[in-house]
Length: 259
Image (tube, rainbow, N blue to C red; front, side, top):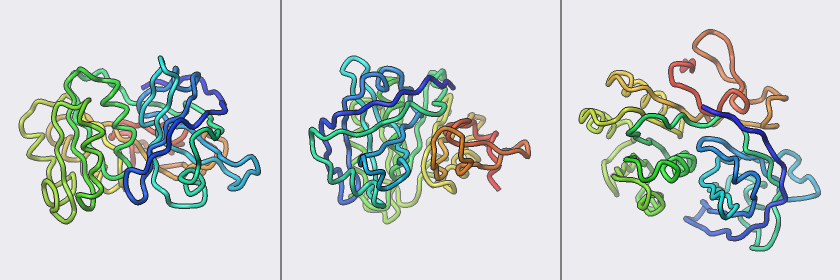
């Protein structure tokens, strides 16, 4: 897991496309950050020069092209900051700070990516960076309408496995329900997961039982993104605490106090 220096750039919005009713994909021109970004890292963004909202918004990096100098951000509209992002037009600028945090260790030769909902965004960057190495993804959503992710992963993953809460596509249930059958084939050397905390806890336990180490990308609330405010502190297995923005957001599963 690595961490690189951070930059602040005025990034030009190249596109801002709706993927579903409340999820958007934005591509911005941000040469320095795109050059240094690693899968699992994040950026802190601000749209308004009036500091409204006051705090930057943390977003996982869903892709980076160092040659083109572009960053891809996939986000769900949940508040004023992301509402501003969804309304932003091509040609507008975005204040971006990053890349921040520690990314995934991609040294395992065959990875299984397990993500639920918007937690699939950083895993998309993993798949793209690992290609053409063999990578598979297990993607979970509430309904088939949320599984637009299958198209996004199609060119970078060898196999795509799907679950939906209502059974409208793939296995009926959560990622944890489909995971045991996948792990039973014994072909994975590492599991990377991001999504709801209960799901990641289950994924980590199942992978451990199968003898596979797991990396988790934590999604604690962040305010500053650089370790100054302590808002994103979480418990560690050694009895201490860690700051998700600075010490993570990626951790080995055994480092986390899941209680």
